[in-house]
Length: 333
Image (cartoon, rainbow, N blue to C red):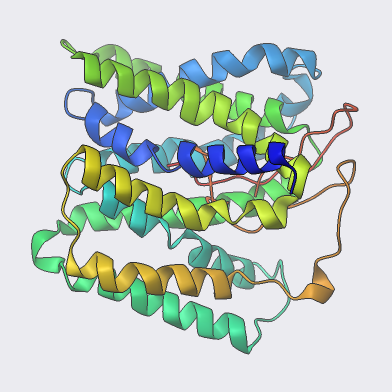
């Protein structure tokens, strides 16, 4: 890879590893729904000028049914539940659990028949990954809240399912307009909630967390991620999915004083190994694509934060020539 590609790669590993920390800080005084509104409204408005320069929202809004469904499954529901879950889970554990998105993505792809039959290595990866998730949760279960774990489960399923909708119904549309429209749709939906549950007091840490989450981890992150896809292709870009949880763990432990538990130590390496093996593609089915060709990334590479995004995890591929391109969404946290 070129130096520019390495810089983009490193930036995305960092940017989509910190939303869990930021969410954990913000929800101290910001209601989860209000946080989703602030993140999507600010992020969507920041992407609006780029969207207008790429043909505007008209072509995207004409596909409003799949767009709304995608927005619900990728952003509206997962970002709300993730914020709610982090009121009771550490940011590091939330990030590690989201690492299971590629595993869920493989299962969703099989069930939807969007890929070929799994081979022995992929089945081994799924088995190892599921054991890792069981250990990650089971070894620390006495300290965990069941409702928060169920919320994370819905987030994982949403991040894994949204790319299927994107690939089948929205893949031929330009990437940034799709993301911008989705963010603004979610913001409009959460506006009434935010008006009722507007925070009465925010300290400087909470304000900074909201701003960084919306500006850096949402708007800027998507632009950089599309550039990374164009530079190295979607398959290689999906590697950030496996680095983001480790970044979340490091920040949670060093900045918030969260502890590293036995479940994290034993379970996460298995989740990581299982995700790598399970999301592996057979070489014969993954021809090299050029920037001007449609390229669908592996299942869950997310955002957020929220990397819409990840996973997710499938992301839009930008084209400097202005041609339409395929989209897949990362799990951005």
